[in-house]
Length: 303
Image 1 (cartoon, rainbow, N blue to C red):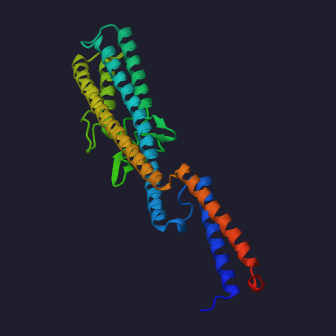
Image 2 (spheres, rainbow, N blue to C red):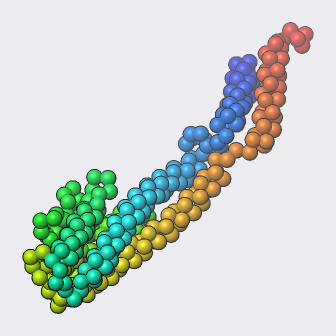
Image 3 (cartoon, rainbow, N blue to C red):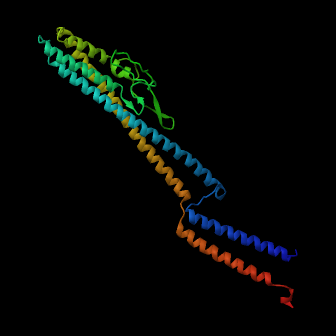
């Protein structure tokens, strides 16, 4: 086979281009500190990195959901604790005349205090997280309670939020379960706390109406059961917060593992790359030098 000058030139040019490409790739990896800068660099590793990226985005979204749910439930816990404190204070106030009172001014004073406490309870039941009423279920743009009656204007929807793949978590507690003693899954009790408040206020009497000791006594018992109802709800909230905390830690652990795998694929050994770059630089320069010398040869050199 006859090797022409053009063939030699083409081969020389091809080798120079290949050497330049290897050198450029090394310089790019050193500059970016990544082994894979485009899919063509390593198709298999690129696919793995894309899958890892999707999983990391999913974990980040779940972490965001967990943070939102945690904030919502902590806000809920504070409100429920406030309601429990109001009921305890109402028990204490009404307990001062649990056998009735013949003094109109005392009855009126206790009545006024209980009316104010119920107003505070309703305000606490209408607590908002951002612009959403936390005890209104899915219908959370309208206040679930008002001071004119004991009707619950929300719904019983138990909202949930995804905290891991194929795993959701309860986000809210509805006002009907909490204060009206209705609803199920979960059920916290059967006491209508708002109606119990009204019964107690009526039983205490006022400056004109005498006390009803029997109803006061039964209302105080129901109020105590109402406190237990709120405490059960608080336990449910704490249980949910514990699960969220555990899932957050699990997600963080999974994220660290995935980042470690991605780092193992992408991480560049700069010292090794530096040595390799130096070798490729020397080889490339040698290729240029030898090609330049060969291109000067002609038939006259052998005559």
